[in-house]
Length: 385
Ligand SMILES: O=c1[nH]cnc2c1ncn2[C@@H]1O[C@H](CO)[C@@H](O)[C@H]1O
Image 1 (cartoon, rainbow, N blue to C red):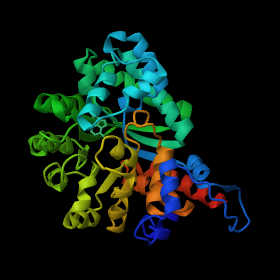
Image 2 (image 1 turned 60 degrees about the vertical axis):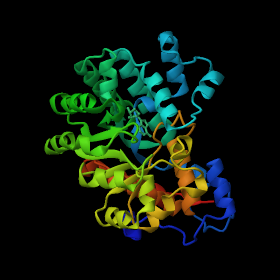
Image 3 (image 1 turned 60 degrees about the horizontal axis):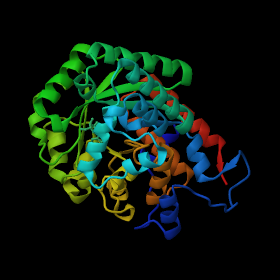
């Protein structure tokens, strides 16, 4: 496989910092270089166009957080009491976050729009359409929070049926393979953890692959959820908690040591702890890195300070994710462009980012092999221009 060319590493260009032009491209989320120095061959495309056409896997994206303005507007109009604006400009302002706590507040206001099983089905199917058609996603592990929907009156049986209907339809209609991760909304504590575990173990389908933990970290210590993760893992689910997004490296250690994390959501603060980086690298524990989200929620102050390069240079596997893309005015394509700017990647490097996500995924082997072959075929047939 093409991925072996780099021994499974994303090839960072050996510079301490991305050059000014790369930083500008990262900020704009695009690449308009036209150096014309490439050999003749297949179609020539800009890095942006290359990314747009690149088959991809997405491992860190939230279900409700993927609702596009079109879907949010539609739901907001159906459920006006939730207080989410329906006007496009007001909606844009509504999604400007003061800090992480405010982000969670806004996020939960959108959660409040999901009231019926039909809301869940439409949301999931439309999100899948946008993933496949807009981002060339071929595989996605979507983080769902059934607890918040059940709390709003949707029975877990109806919830499960709705997402499963959408999953089957999305694979049939868009060729997108979907898998689920159920996360505990951390701010709701042990009752949410108990319920989410039961939804996973008693109601989860074969498409449920992971067990997660989201929401705030401050005031929500990870160790309290160890029994839940123990049971989820014993039932065959993979452990994928968020950690180190808004607190220090100790939270990441807790996630790894106590919750058995196989991948970490965000993990930004791991960059402060060289021993932790070495541990993540030697155990192949991937960090799901969502640069624009980190800036929007103020987890990282500026893009120039983003730790992605530190992770890659330390040999930590990374999977680029979009988190809650419409809320952060981004897309997975744009996150790839930002990552390319931070790492100084060309088209080969960007293709390798996509392979890295496939490797870190919990996709069945046959799906992984198919995706790797698709990426190789695409990268081999497209020349940068
Ligand atoms: O970046 C994020 N970090 C943590 N939680 C998040 C993020 N994006 C969405 N959620 C969601 O916030 C809800 C409240 O706990 C959870 O449902 C979690 O999935």
